[in-house]
Image (cartoon, rainbow, N blue to C red; front, side, top):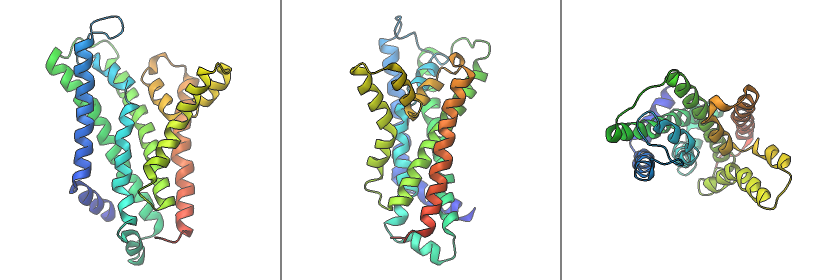
Length: 254
């Protein structure tokens, strides 16, 4: 716990995480303001505090961009100034070093999600009021928020795996972006050239971005579809973590 507390203190003292939070809040405000300006038609319903949640959840995959700076701030710096090597010399196990960055990243991911959704709802409420709350609204709201946040954490732990495997913060974002966006780009390309839809649907099962979007409409999904999306999240949580810890145990720390 001491290492986690110390790292959170160090990270919150830097300007990078504050800029990330500001960027996330600005993104949410921009989405809501644009929706209000161009809303009120069949394509964009009138926005208030309640209806803004639909928009914010459907655009949450764009907020995945806010995850990129998080693992580069929590994990990458320890390989630039001999921190990782020194902490191992001081007796901190490599597993503790790895898992502490995982936990810190998860905490910051949850904070990013709260800022994005919370700022968006607050902006819409200030401008248009909160609106009438339908039956079951809060139950569905917390289910969607929790499911999407789970996928965000899974994606961020992929980033941690990349950082500890490569030990080079300069190429982490490119590799992470490739892993996250490749299934989406591939499925869209195949769709443009009229490939069999069954093949495209199979590829989309491995698309983290698509899974986050689908979870925004949780009530319309079958139980099987929900479980498949969450299983993808579990896969990205467990497999890179196990491989990352095992690889880092044997790696020479740069």
